Length: 336
Image (cartoon, rainbow, N blue to C red; front, side):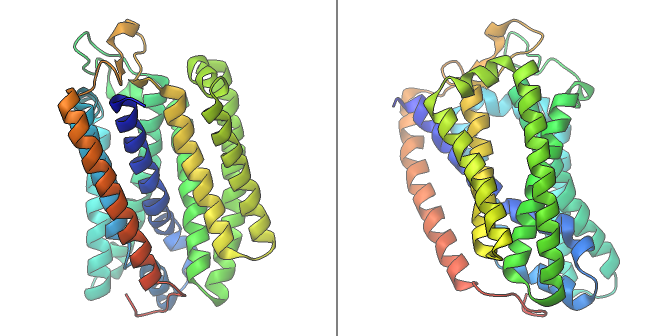
């Protein structure tokens, strides 16, 4: 495995880690006004993510830093071409963080903080998928590798379908985490939401598969003609089946792990379908597309990044395991 492929795999792994860990945070935020019926239940949902949400977001920062160091032209294109999308996501995450902290300590405007928490979770959960859809579909690029389209072109039907699918994925994941951490009536509502969200997620994945076969033929070909693609397809199917079996058997942790497996599989399928492209060109010469070969940093930079990413990933895994073991068990009102 060469350094370019190694860095591509590591960036994809960090992205998958973020999607799994912060995905349930976002899902809980989207479900917050739906599941919670009183202040104690709202406190339980906030407590369920309170000790871990900020650590989960570190995976996104690390993935962005790794992209900047290993594939700087891709970082430059995405942050300039998707500027409005990224700003919306960043402001949403900021308001979400502020809402969580102020909701715990300041009781004059609880409704404002609750709305900020909901919107700050909904916007990233949707827009992450829209951005991913554009990276899969391809975007118009100039000869220098800069985005050559408009903001409206990013809101195309395929990318919006990927966005809605991602939203359903995060909602299912959030409901699964809420079920793990809650009890009583809140737990019952969380399990119902988990079942409904998974059904919607499966339907959207099926629709997305059909659309990919018809309109994203290069991506679909890469997945179906690479062994790792079929491994990920089986992981996706296994995660869905395992999650449904766990729901029927009332095994909340197993249902959460099934949801996590589905997320890892989808992120992996997006990466495998694109490789070696990082940002495919659409509507402009294919030579303007950014690949792991044309957009990578120097060999020395890749060597340094590989070592740092491996060490950082190991530390991140150790910390994540430790903090989740420390705060395991059911959440209760007032513990945040």
